[in-house]
Image (cartoon, rainbow, N blue to C red; front, side, top):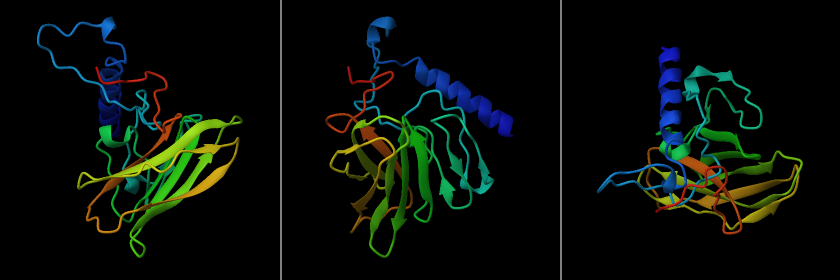
Length: 188
């Protein structure tokens, strides 16, 4: 079963890879509707070949883009595009493009709290964090902040008044808090 999921994940990654940032490289035909995300979030990584549920409880190491999860910790690949949403009691933990984001929901304060850490040896462009809720609401993004090499910063996103069953998070990089890195998908 795991092999089938792996094969399906790889196939989905290859399909997504074919949808690059420059439409001049492929033809859509007459009347074709082809759009790209306006923002490529820092956690979007088209070569993500794995998806796991929190119950599987094991570690993977894939260089800088590696992740680990067990028990109540989950790490979605591709965030909102992957369909991997976390329950209110689960913790998001992921490393993408040198940013380690750890975030969880605190029901007592009705907020998402956690840390953002620069795992690289270089300063990163301004970083911000956002959370998407199952009710369609996006919290944030936070005000962009600089992260020096190895630096970590605490974050909090208020979710007061929001009712949701699941959520996912993402980090963004760039002067306006948006990442247009490798692949740099844009709306055409």
